[in-house]
Amino acid sequence: MKQVIALEVNGERHEIAVQPSATLLQVLREELDLLGTKQACDAGGCGCCTVLLDGRAVYSCMVFAMSAQDKKITTIEGLPKDGKLDPLQEAFIQAGAVQCGYCTSGMIMAAKEFLTSARAPSDPEIRQAISGNLCRCTGYHKTVDAIRMAASGR
Amino acid sequence: MGISGVREFCRPQSARDVVDLLAKHGDRAVLLAGGTFLHGLFARGLGSGVEVLVDLQKAGLSYVKAANGGLALGAMTTFRELAESEAVQKTAEFAAIRDALQYPPAQIRNQATVGGCVASASSLFDLPVALLALDGSVKSLGPRGPRETTLAKFFVDYFEHSLEKGEFLTEVLLPKLPPRSASAFLKLETNSNDLALVNVAVRITLDQAGLCRDARVVIGGGVGKAPVRAVSCEAVLKGQRPSRTLFESAAQEVSSDIQPVSDHRASGQYRRAVAKVYLRRALLRAAERLGVEIA
Image 1 (cartoon, rainbow over the protein chains, first blue to last red):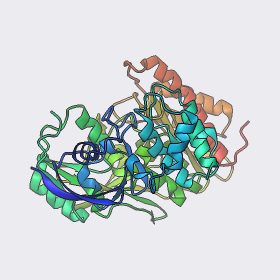
Image 2 (cartoon, one colour; image 1 turned 180 degrees about the vertical axis):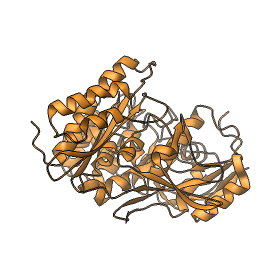
Image 3 (spheres, rainbow over the protein chains, first blue to last red; image 1 turned 60 degrees about the vertical axis):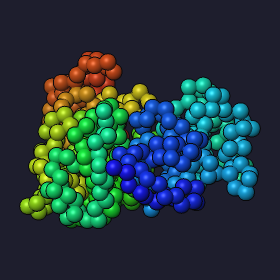
Image 4 (cartoon, rainbow over the protein chains, first blue to last red; image 1 turned 30 degrees about the vertical axis):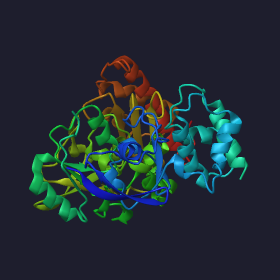
């Protein structure tokens, strides 16, 4: 039976009726139409569904929507400010870090948390930070370039 | 398929409330900690009998605190919180935990919990191997009150622990270790989000003369139905002065302690070979942490 809960997504409060077994990923995509967060493995193995919960990167396929109540949820749609892309999004474009694009929002969300604390990170540190995200196109080089660019551009 | 039968989601506010919910719902209820293991099971179509999910997030079990000279780790403490605690970051004795928590990606570190990881009783997980090498025990709460079980007795079989129905894990306790103790953990994995092919944790304690007064050697991954304490290796170490030769002979002994499985990820023979190498390296790492010159 569905239950009505409140979720704070990208600074906006939503009241949504959800199944108690629904994942946060399902609710973001199917109820809130936030399709930037991708579903791929749906089992915590690929990182495409990464969002921030209270600023921490998590796999939204492994979080029940019910557990995300009273937390601040940030998806890729929440990154641009005042109509301007986030510096990380800009860096991904500049570096050409996107091929098919399916992993990109998850990569950016993982990098977003990483760059809140990392200062001038080394390449191995960047690689470690995105080790929970799979990309089957780029070979990761340009992704690492993009995150390094975003880190140095601040 | 999966958990479509779930009709209720509870968020109890205390450990006592959790016990009441377990008494009320019995086998129909499943406890939810970080969820990373549980979602993995559900994604594989398991969980069809589950009607009630009990989320432990609000039950007041997130903490790392000093207890009896050692540490008490609340069941809902995330890997990240544990890794960032001072005892784990700074001491040689708890360094095996630090090592073990460096392997998973940020998303898992932010989400997975100490209690969820231990209570899963998976023979392939990392943290339990480190906690076993530190002589950890488990505190649980049930209808008859709290009790403590050593981790060695807690892990019974594949995905099976020794708690009774109605009980649940509230805390992991780590005892105070003697001075001049250090630990280390190493894991072989095929990618950063992989379960161990083999993992090892060691702890050594030296006496005033620099001889090995006590040792713990634990091997996990596909080497048994639960992590295995390698008592033959420990026997080789005890009373001896740490050296490369000693660590090599201890590592060779591991063959008599483990029965590695062969599966699609690795052959038993390969796991056995890797266990020896990783054991030697982990012993060297622990010795380095004690500042010992290794001949």
